[in-house]
Image (tube, rainbow, N blue to C red; front, side):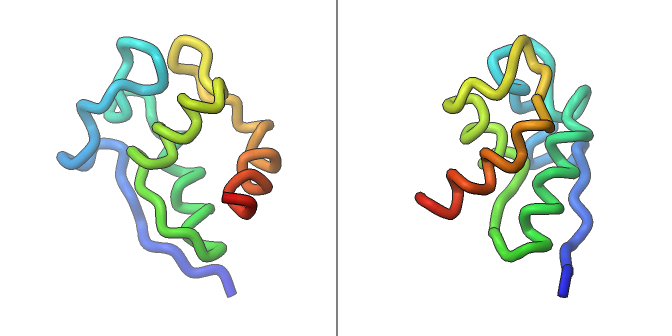
Length: 82
């Protein structure tokens, strides 16, 4: 069963966090990142937009703040291995 709680890109906890390696923020441009975080949590992970942001930045899945959603399958496989 898929169960998740709503997360918001403008949550005070992370809205000022830089998105990837850019000057943009999760609050300004992090809607896809936040949605992916909710999807991950819905299938059993315990993530926040900040933790997903950090993991994706380390894995070069950003280019100037653009999150490459087509790499989600690779990301899920890596999470299972870590």
